[in-house]
Each structure stands twice: as C-alpha cells, then as structure tokens.
Image (cartoon, rainbow, N blue to C red; front, top):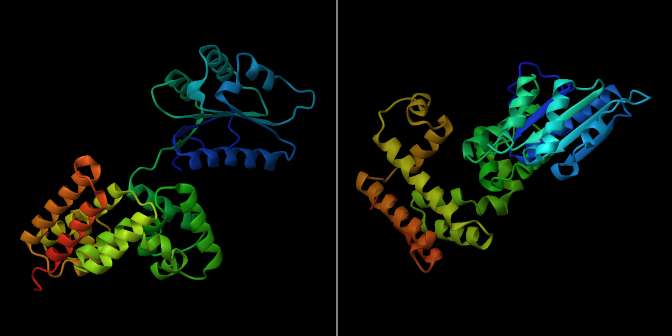
Length: 328
C-alpha cells in the first residue's frame, strides 16, 4: 500500500484512502481502527456509506462528548456524497475535532475531486489503493505479502501463485497467509503446486507454457481443463501471445547474463532462464507462424468466429508445431 503523505500517523485527524482496490481500502480502514483501539479500547467506530452521511450527520458524529471518547468515522464512497454533505465535510476539514479520526474512502476519479483536493490541501494523511490490473502489480503484491509476514518465497513460487489464483487480491492474500502458516522454510514453486494443483493446472499460463514447449497433447489437456473451470478464453489468448513474444524477444536479443537480458527485455531473470529452456527448436519463421495463430485465435474468441474453443485448440496445435520446427 503506497503512502503519499509526508506523515504516516494512523491517528492523524484525517486519512484519505484513494483508489478502487477493495482489499487495500479495507486495510486502510483496519489500520486506523486498530491504532485507535490500541490508544483507547473503547473507541467508537462509525462506518458509513455515502448515502448514510446526510447533511448535518457529520456534525452530530463529531460533536464534543462529555466523556471525551475517541471516535473513528469512516465514509465509504466519498466521491458520491451530495453537494450539501460535501460542504459539511469541507467545513469539518478546516477544523477537525480532537480525539476523532475521519477516514474518507474515495475512488480517485474526477467525480468528487473537489473534496479530495480539499483534504489534500489541509495535509490529510493519504493512502493509495489503486486497482491492480497488471500481472506485474499482482506479482509485486504477493512478494510484499510474504515480506510482511517475514517469509521467503522464490520468484517462481510468487509467479505460480499469481498464475494459479488470478486477479482477486483477497484470494491472493489468503493464499499467502495459508502458505506462510503451513510451510516451514522457503516457499518454492513445488509447494505452490501441491497446494493449488487444480487451479495451477487450469492456469492460462500453463496452457501457454506447454504450447511453446511443443507439448501439444499436454497443452490441449490444460486448455480443456482451463475452459471447464471457467478461465476466460481471452485470458488464454493473452497468455499465448505473451509466451510467443517472449520467445521472439529472447531469440533476437544479444547473448549475455540473465540479469543483463532482464534489463534489456524487461523480464525478471528467472523468466529469462525459463524462456531459454522453452525456445529450443524455435526458428524466426516459427515465431511468425505462432504469432499469426495467436492473432487468429484472438479474433475468434472476440466474436470473429463461431467456436472460441476450436479457435484456441487450433492456435495451441499451431504453436506447438512451430516450437518443434527445428527439431523435426
């Protein structure tokens, strides 16, 4: 969770959590609540949606108490507050009450930007909670989760976990916690495979790996398993494209150490080693044929054909044959 503010006190008068990643937004709230209850076990927590915070409600919640109790007021979907309520919040930001922490959860888009700007202007503590749409972001998240638990996991294990679980951060975090609790020592790819066998085999990247290795039968088996377990066809074409492009990039790159090639090609060193093993048998013509097969499959699964499954099977076979061109 990246923090953008100059200070990082969970009990700052105002915290804004900006973004659309639900897990990170919830963690931002939990961090503040935990700090407040560590300071005062009787802290009163009010967790409100935007429609529950009506004009005048914030003034009631933040009015002085006879017992000077600590309070945390959480407002979710702050970008959707009414104009009158936003006026109330802005007025409060100018003079926040003692012993009260206001937490505003904001999507970060243009809607409600004035409220976000006002909070930043008064120096609110800010936590970035961006939606993690890129595989690299989810991989970094998994690594950070292991580090936070004081555990060591190999790069291959982290990648296997992302491939197996998918894009749901809650499931990824839960998987990391389970592995950290159950496994002693360094967590490697074999451990992840044992825990998530069914899901790992259903991974779109497993289909791609078997295809670029020229193992047509295994690639087709993995493809059918993936489709039967609900993996979206577009995810499979994306994985196939990444696999073939990696072969093409590495085959045309200058020789060198994995670390040097990693910088040049934008791949982690462990992936350089894996692709080097996969690229045996590939030719430039084979890469061109495979890329055309992927493009045709992509068009087929996005409405250009009547049978997305057949389009994928055809691509997988074409890629596997291209991978074996030099061997044959």
